[in-house]
Length: 77
Image (tube, rainbow, N blue to C red; front, side, top):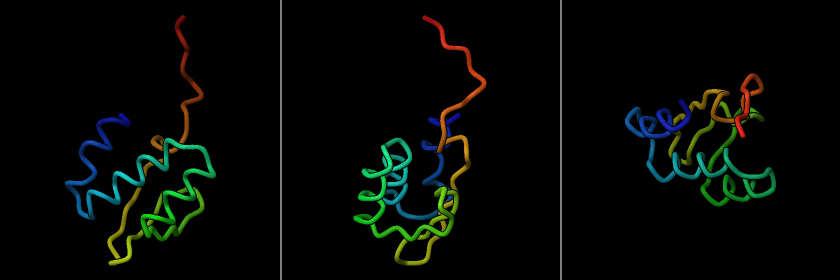
């Protein structure tokens, strides 16, 4: 579902570069994520990155499933 979201998200508006920065930030450690968000000029409305804006005012909504690891999955060896 994550890959599907990231592949289709840019088609709903906003800049591709911002979507790419949000993806990298969502998949990074907190300190790296903050640096990525700052350098991309992203304005974070919610602390969990679910709602963000770019400098032009375009809104970016991220579902929680792209921001956290699933807790109900069984890992196979």
